[in-house]
View: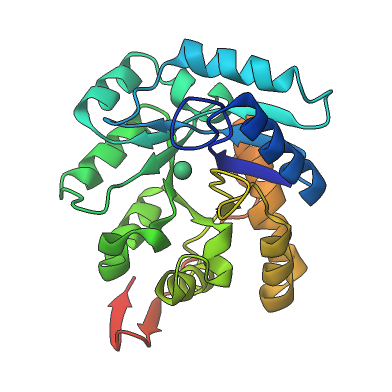
Length: 256
Ligand SMILES: [Fe+2]
C-alpha cells in the first residue's frame, strides 16, 4: 500500500518529534505492508513550510531505513494567502512527490465562499487538489454539497483510515462511508502523527473496505490511486457520482 498523507518527519510539525519517533512510525508502516509513504507536514500559519528543511529531514529518515520503506514528500497545504502566493511562485515543493497532486486541508472555523474560485485557480495552474479528510471537518459535514461541488470541479477527496472504523467518532465514520458510496472518495490515507492513537497504518482500513465493499475498491483507494498520484498520473479509479442520495442521519436530500 501507499500512504499519501502522514506526519512522519522529525521536528517539523505536530507529528514525529525526534528521529526515533520517525523510525518507530516507519517500522509500523513496514509491518503493516506499506511500501511508500508521502511525508506531508502541515503548511499553515502555525507551521511554516520550509522545503529545504523538509527534504533534509526526509534524507535523514530515508538513510535509516535500509531501503525497506520509501519516503517521498509533499505537504498538508492550508489555503491561506501567503501559502497561495508561494504556491503560485513554485508549486512543486508542495505537491505529492513534486508532481501535480496537492493535499488541501481546511480549518474547522470557516471556509470562505471564494474557495470555489481558489480551487478552480489551482486547476488552472495545472494542479490536482485532494481535499483531506472532509469527514473530520464540521463545516463540510454540515454542507456536503460544497464537497460535491469541488469534486464535480475535478478535485479529489481523501478520507482518514481511522475514520472508517470510528476512531474520529460515529458521525465522521458514517459520512466517510456515505461519501465512499456516493463516489466522492478517491483515497484512504493514515494521516499518521505518532505510534499511539494515530499510527501510520492502513491494513485495517484495507481489510474493512474489502469486507464491506469489495477487494477491488480497497485496492483502488489504498494502492492503485495513491500510486498513480505519487507518479503524477491520472487516477485509475474515478467513481461515478450518484445522482441523488438520501442522507438518512440528517433526514435531508442533496442533488447532483
Ligand atoms: Fe495531516
